[in-house]
Length: 290
Image: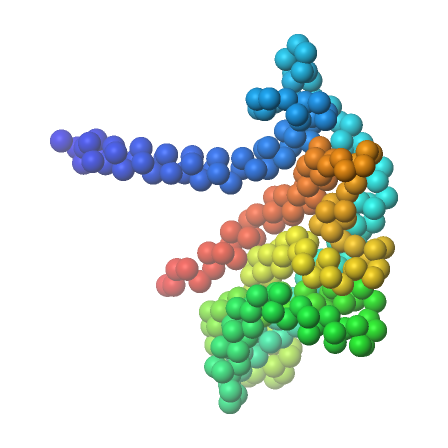
Protein backbone atom coordinates (compact mmCIF):
# COMPACT_ATOMS: atom_id res chain seq x y z
CA UNK A 1 0.00 0.00 0.00
CA UNK A 2 1.24 3.49 -0.85
CA UNK A 3 2.29 5.35 2.30
CA UNK A 4 0.50 8.50 1.15
CA UNK A 5 -2.80 6.65 0.80
CA UNK A 6 -2.59 4.84 4.12
CA UNK A 7 -5.50 5.48 6.52
CA UNK A 8 -3.20 7.02 9.12
CA UNK A 9 -1.80 9.60 6.67
CA UNK A 10 -5.29 10.36 5.43
CA UNK A 11 -6.46 11.02 8.98
CA UNK A 12 -3.44 13.29 9.57
CA UNK A 13 -4.19 15.32 6.43
CA UNK A 14 -7.86 15.66 7.34
CA UNK A 15 -6.98 16.69 10.90
CA UNK A 16 -4.41 19.20 9.64
CA UNK A 17 -6.86 20.75 7.16
CA UNK A 18 -9.55 20.89 9.82
CA UNK A 19 -7.16 22.66 12.19
CA UNK A 20 -6.23 25.23 9.50
CA UNK A 21 -9.90 25.92 8.73
CA UNK A 22 -10.70 26.23 12.44
CA UNK A 23 -7.86 28.73 12.98
CA UNK A 24 -8.93 30.79 9.95
CA UNK A 25 -12.53 30.92 11.11
CA UNK A 26 -11.48 31.73 14.67
CA UNK A 27 -9.26 34.61 13.52
CA UNK A 28 -11.47 36.04 10.77
CA UNK A 29 -14.90 35.71 12.40
CA UNK A 30 -14.56 38.77 14.70
CA UNK A 31 -13.62 40.99 11.75
CA UNK A 32 -16.42 39.50 9.63
CA UNK A 33 -18.94 40.12 12.40
CA UNK A 34 -17.73 43.72 12.82
CA UNK A 35 -18.21 44.39 9.09
CA UNK A 36 -21.56 42.60 9.13
CA UNK A 37 -22.76 44.67 12.11
CA UNK A 38 -21.49 47.90 10.56
CA UNK A 39 -23.78 47.33 7.55
CA UNK A 40 -26.91 47.01 9.71
CA UNK A 41 -29.38 49.58 10.96
CA UNK A 42 -30.28 49.73 14.63
CA UNK A 43 -33.44 47.67 14.09
CA UNK A 44 -31.45 45.03 12.20
CA UNK A 45 -28.91 44.85 15.01
CA UNK A 46 -31.64 43.98 17.52
CA UNK A 47 -33.18 41.21 15.40
CA UNK A 48 -33.45 37.85 17.15
CA UNK A 49 -32.01 35.55 16.17
CA UNK A 50 -29.11 37.55 14.76
CA UNK A 51 -28.63 37.26 11.01
CA UNK A 52 -25.37 36.35 9.30
CA UNK A 53 -26.05 39.09 6.71
CA UNK A 54 -27.91 42.43 6.97
CA UNK A 55 -31.58 41.66 6.29
CA UNK A 56 -34.77 43.68 6.43
CA UNK A 57 -36.66 42.90 9.68
CA UNK A 58 -39.99 42.64 7.87
CA UNK A 59 -39.18 40.85 4.61
CA UNK A 60 -35.85 39.22 5.56
CA UNK A 61 -34.44 40.37 2.23
CA UNK A 62 -30.78 41.34 1.97
CA UNK A 63 -30.64 45.02 2.98
CA UNK A 64 -27.16 46.40 3.82
CA UNK A 65 -26.75 50.08 4.62
CA UNK A 66 -23.83 52.51 4.67
CA UNK A 67 -25.43 54.96 7.07
CA UNK A 68 -23.07 53.95 9.90
CA UNK A 69 -20.01 54.66 7.75
CA UNK A 70 -21.51 57.97 6.65
CA UNK A 71 -22.11 58.98 10.27
CA UNK A 72 -18.59 57.98 11.31
CA UNK A 73 -16.90 59.84 8.44
CA UNK A 74 -18.88 62.98 9.36
CA UNK A 75 -17.86 62.72 13.01
CA UNK A 76 -15.17 65.32 13.74
CA UNK A 77 -14.03 63.45 16.85
CA UNK A 78 -13.32 60.29 14.86
CA UNK A 79 -11.50 62.11 12.03
CA UNK A 80 -9.39 64.03 14.55
CA UNK A 81 -8.57 60.76 16.34
CA UNK A 82 -7.59 59.20 13.02
CA UNK A 83 -5.18 62.06 12.34
CA UNK A 84 -3.75 61.88 15.87
CA UNK A 85 -3.22 58.12 15.60
CA UNK A 86 -1.45 58.54 12.27
CA UNK A 87 0.90 61.20 13.66
CA UNK A 88 1.63 59.35 16.91
CA UNK A 89 2.01 55.85 15.43
CA UNK A 90 4.18 57.03 12.52
CA UNK A 91 6.42 59.15 14.75
CA UNK A 92 6.79 56.32 17.26
CA UNK A 93 7.68 53.82 14.53
CA UNK A 94 10.26 56.11 12.88
CA UNK A 95 11.94 56.99 16.17
CA UNK A 96 11.92 53.35 17.33
CA UNK A 97 13.52 52.19 14.06
CA UNK A 98 16.18 54.91 14.11
CA UNK A 99 17.18 54.40 17.74
CA UNK A 100 16.66 50.63 17.60
CA UNK A 101 18.80 50.15 14.50
CA UNK A 102 21.73 52.05 16.06
CA UNK A 103 21.40 50.06 19.29
CA UNK A 104 21.02 46.77 17.42
CA UNK A 105 24.14 47.48 15.35
CA UNK A 106 26.16 48.17 18.50
CA UNK A 107 24.80 45.12 20.31
CA UNK A 108 25.03 42.80 17.32
CA UNK A 109 28.33 43.77 15.71
CA UNK A 110 30.46 45.75 18.14
CA UNK A 111 32.32 44.21 21.06
CA UNK A 112 32.21 46.05 24.39
CA UNK A 113 31.93 45.24 28.07
CA UNK A 114 28.37 44.76 29.33
CA UNK A 115 26.89 43.85 25.95
CA UNK A 116 25.07 40.71 27.14
CA UNK A 117 23.70 42.31 30.35
CA UNK A 118 22.42 45.17 28.19
CA UNK A 119 20.62 42.70 25.92
CA UNK A 120 18.98 40.94 28.86
CA UNK A 121 18.01 44.28 30.38
CA UNK A 122 16.31 45.27 27.12
CA UNK A 123 14.47 41.95 27.08
CA UNK A 124 13.42 42.42 30.71
CA UNK A 125 11.92 45.83 29.89
CA UNK A 126 9.43 44.15 27.55
CA UNK A 127 8.11 41.96 30.38
CA UNK A 128 6.64 44.75 32.51
CA UNK A 129 2.88 45.28 32.08
CA UNK A 130 1.97 48.78 30.94
CA UNK A 131 -0.13 49.46 34.01
CA UNK A 132 2.89 49.04 36.33
CA UNK A 133 4.70 52.04 34.83
CA UNK A 134 1.66 54.13 33.98
CA UNK A 135 1.35 56.05 37.26
CA UNK A 136 5.01 56.99 37.56
CA UNK A 137 5.27 57.83 33.88
CA UNK A 138 2.20 60.04 34.03
CA UNK A 139 3.65 61.91 37.02
CA UNK A 140 6.97 62.47 35.24
CA UNK A 141 5.41 63.66 31.98
CA UNK A 142 2.97 65.93 33.84
CA UNK A 143 5.86 67.48 35.77
CA UNK A 144 7.79 68.06 32.53
CA UNK A 145 4.74 69.67 30.94
CA UNK A 146 4.89 67.78 27.63
CA UNK A 147 1.94 68.13 25.21
CA UNK A 148 -0.33 65.09 25.01
CA UNK A 149 0.83 63.92 21.56
CA UNK A 150 4.52 64.22 22.48
CA UNK A 151 3.77 62.37 25.73
CA UNK A 152 2.16 59.52 23.79
CA UNK A 153 5.09 59.23 21.37
CA UNK A 154 7.67 58.99 24.16
CA UNK A 155 5.42 56.69 26.20
CA UNK A 156 4.94 54.28 23.30
CA UNK A 157 8.71 54.15 22.85
CA UNK A 158 8.85 52.32 26.18
CA UNK A 159 7.42 49.15 24.65
CA UNK A 160 8.28 49.61 20.93
CA UNK A 161 11.98 50.46 21.32
CA UNK A 162 13.01 47.37 23.37
CA UNK A 163 11.12 45.10 20.98
CA UNK A 164 12.65 46.77 17.91
CA UNK A 165 16.16 46.65 19.37
CA UNK A 166 15.91 43.01 20.41
CA UNK A 167 14.60 41.81 17.04
CA UNK A 168 17.02 43.89 14.95
CA UNK A 169 19.97 42.72 17.06
CA UNK A 170 19.29 39.16 15.95
CA UNK A 171 19.34 40.25 12.30
CA UNK A 172 22.59 42.20 12.67
CA UNK A 173 24.20 39.16 14.31
CA UNK A 174 23.30 37.06 11.26
CA UNK A 175 25.17 39.38 8.87
CA UNK A 176 28.69 38.09 8.05
CA UNK A 177 31.53 39.76 9.94
CA UNK A 178 33.47 39.75 6.68
CA UNK A 179 31.34 42.67 5.49
CA UNK A 180 32.58 44.89 8.30
CA UNK A 181 36.16 43.68 7.91
CA UNK A 182 36.16 44.44 4.18
CA UNK A 183 34.72 47.89 4.81
CA UNK A 184 37.34 48.61 7.45
CA UNK A 185 40.11 47.57 5.05
CA UNK A 186 38.69 50.05 2.53
CA UNK A 187 38.87 52.77 5.16
CA UNK A 188 35.19 53.01 6.10
CA UNK A 189 34.28 54.10 9.61
CA UNK A 190 31.86 51.97 11.70
CA UNK A 191 29.08 54.50 11.00
CA UNK A 192 29.72 54.41 7.26
CA UNK A 193 29.69 50.63 7.34
CA UNK A 194 26.42 50.66 9.25
CA UNK A 195 24.73 53.23 7.00
CA UNK A 196 25.92 52.12 3.57
CA UNK A 197 26.38 48.36 3.89
CA UNK A 198 24.64 46.73 6.86
CA UNK A 199 21.48 48.83 7.13
CA UNK A 200 20.27 48.18 3.54
CA UNK A 201 20.73 44.45 4.11
CA UNK A 202 18.35 44.58 7.09
CA UNK A 203 15.50 46.14 5.07
CA UNK A 204 13.20 43.10 5.55
CA UNK A 205 13.81 43.23 9.31
CA UNK A 206 13.17 46.97 9.40
CA UNK A 207 9.86 46.54 7.56
CA UNK A 208 8.76 43.67 9.80
CA UNK A 209 9.64 45.31 13.11
CA UNK A 210 8.44 48.72 11.91
CA UNK A 211 5.04 47.34 10.95
CA UNK A 212 4.65 45.52 14.26
CA UNK A 213 5.67 48.66 16.16
CA UNK A 214 3.18 50.71 14.12
CA UNK A 215 0.36 48.26 14.86
CA UNK A 216 1.18 48.30 18.59
CA UNK A 217 1.13 52.11 18.68
CA UNK A 218 -1.96 52.34 16.46
CA UNK A 219 -4.02 50.00 18.65
CA UNK A 220 -2.77 51.15 22.08
CA UNK A 221 -5.56 52.31 24.39
CA UNK A 222 -4.45 52.51 28.05
CA UNK A 223 -1.72 55.15 27.68
CA UNK A 224 -3.80 57.08 25.14
CA UNK A 225 -6.79 57.21 27.49
CA UNK A 226 -4.60 58.42 30.39
CA UNK A 227 -2.45 61.04 28.66
CA UNK A 228 -5.30 62.58 26.66
CA UNK A 229 -7.64 62.89 29.64
CA UNK A 230 -6.74 66.58 30.04
CA UNK A 231 -6.54 67.26 26.28
CA UNK A 232 -9.50 65.68 24.43
CA UNK A 233 -8.30 67.14 21.10
CA UNK A 234 -5.28 64.79 21.23
CA UNK A 235 -7.31 61.59 21.59
CA UNK A 236 -6.19 58.77 19.31
CA UNK A 237 -8.70 56.74 17.39
CA UNK A 238 -9.17 53.86 19.93
CA UNK A 239 -10.08 56.42 22.60
CA UNK A 240 -12.27 58.38 20.17
CA UNK A 241 -14.22 55.20 19.36
CA UNK A 242 -14.65 54.46 23.08
CA UNK A 243 -16.18 57.91 23.55
CA UNK A 244 -18.75 57.52 20.78
CA UNK A 245 -22.19 58.63 21.99
CA UNK A 246 -25.54 57.75 20.51
CA UNK A 247 -28.13 60.20 19.25
CA UNK A 248 -30.37 59.28 22.19
CA UNK A 249 -29.35 59.33 25.86
CA UNK A 250 -27.94 56.01 27.09
CA UNK A 251 -27.93 54.65 23.54
CA UNK A 252 -24.96 52.55 22.53
CA UNK A 253 -24.13 53.28 18.85
CA UNK A 254 -23.03 49.72 18.18
CA UNK A 255 -23.30 50.01 14.40
CA UNK A 256 -21.16 53.16 14.30
CA UNK A 257 -18.57 51.60 16.60
CA UNK A 258 -18.29 48.57 14.31
CA UNK A 259 -18.04 50.84 11.25
CA UNK A 260 -15.26 52.85 12.91
CA UNK A 261 -13.46 49.65 13.91
CA UNK A 262 -13.63 48.40 10.31
CA UNK A 263 -12.28 51.70 8.96
CA UNK A 264 -9.43 51.71 11.50
CA UNK A 265 -8.41 48.20 10.44
CA UNK A 266 -8.16 49.11 6.74
CA UNK A 267 -4.80 50.99 6.97
CA UNK A 268 -3.21 48.01 8.73
CA UNK A 269 -4.50 45.59 6.11
CA UNK A 270 -3.23 47.86 3.31
CA UNK A 271 0.22 48.10 4.91
CA UNK A 272 0.45 44.32 5.28
CA UNK A 273 -0.59 43.80 1.64
CA UNK A 274 1.95 46.35 0.40
CA UNK A 275 4.87 44.99 2.42
CA UNK A 276 3.90 41.32 2.53
CA UNK A 277 6.96 40.17 0.56
CA UNK A 278 9.37 42.01 2.84
CA UNK A 279 7.46 40.81 5.92
CA UNK A 280 7.83 37.19 4.85
CA UNK A 281 11.50 37.78 4.05
CA UNK A 282 12.02 39.38 7.45
CA UNK A 283 10.29 36.59 9.33
CA UNK A 284 12.25 33.85 7.52
CA UNK A 285 15.66 35.57 7.38
CA UNK A 286 18.26 33.55 9.23
CA UNK A 287 16.03 30.47 9.39
CA UNK A 288 18.31 28.54 7.02
CA UNK A 289 22.08 28.72 7.05
CA UNK A 290 24.33 27.51 4.31
